[in-house]
Image 1 (cartoon, protein in one colour):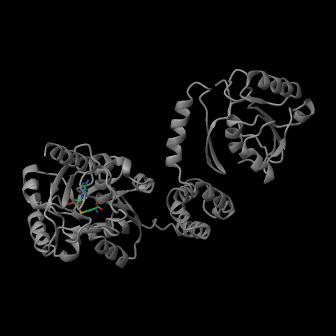
Image 2 (cartoon, rainbow, N blue to C red; image 1 turned 135 degrees about the horizontal axis):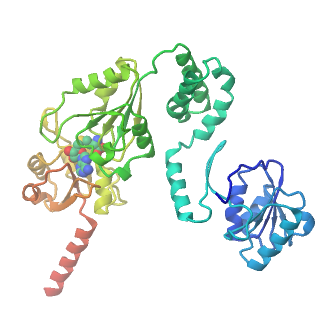
Length: 466
Ligand code: SAH
């Protein structure tokens, strides 16, 4: 370790930065997070620096720093991006005994500015001795994703609670309390606000004092259409913390692998028209696990609030007095639209769009066909493969144009995805011919952008031939 990491108290101390361009701005953005007395020396300062000086955040000197400017400074930054000027500041800093950083020049520097993950007062500094800045950035990105934004707030409020926590015996019980706060109740409360964090601390302490089992919780999490990269950060975090994961069969393995190694993973629901777990059994499973104090993640494909029988599960959890939260996900319609390069709404075409189900508990689902048949209608039809002939018949009967585009997107967002561009007139034949086996959403009223382009080309060609 050539460079030893330390945290320097800069509150109220002078930091000298020389330079007014991009390098200076980058460093100043970091330094503005401190409580230091920032002095910037720049003859031609960037507009941002002028603005900061106007707001009193930095003291701007439109001059070259002299020896006395460095006396007693805590740190000095040479950010001229010019070797000769940087070296001049370096000499002054050395003479004054002030640690120096020359931006992008490791050899000429006394110290390195690390990559920083800021959850003040929790600060993570990452250094690679200048060997691999790319690696430092990758680690930073990883941590940014992993550490909740509210962590700093939790730590600040947590700090004020330390004396109360001493009511718990030293060692394990106290550690368990803090870990429950920082990793479970705290992050949940942080979403609501500071008061909620305070009450979370009090409730967590009361629970631990009474040595009660920790309360169970059910997160209803939308897993998105299948691509793990389309999970929300919240969904990732819930999976990280889950003791039990109860998932629909549509949720693919790469997403389930994100659950904790120790988590119990249970598959429920149904696959296409195959065997299914009765809803009552799923409801019971949720309650049963949460009642033991488990953190349960109920993982549903897409968005949990779309054709997911969410209410029945919410009712069951509510009736058992179990706390829950809902984490939204990307629904199949959004993923399919992205894939075919189309907008779900468009000015002058459709100012509303529908999410329909092809069949419901009673069989093929009836809809307001007359409205759907109007030109320009866009509807994402879920669970529509089997109902295609029925849909086609009803829509044509109500006057929908037979050349209305219908695009079938199977396994949207997944590597094995397929897109079938069809028209209302040939929908059921095209679907049968495609022999789709995965989940598919029918995008009524939308053609893939590419196919439209090729249709247009064909039309032009035909015209040219005529
Ligand atoms: N809650 C889910 C929908 C569940 S209903 C969501 O918001 O997406 C199940 C239906 O969703 C499937 O029959 C299919 O129509 C659609 N679906 C789910 N995932 C899909 C995917 N990756 N590609 C296409 N359709 C999908």
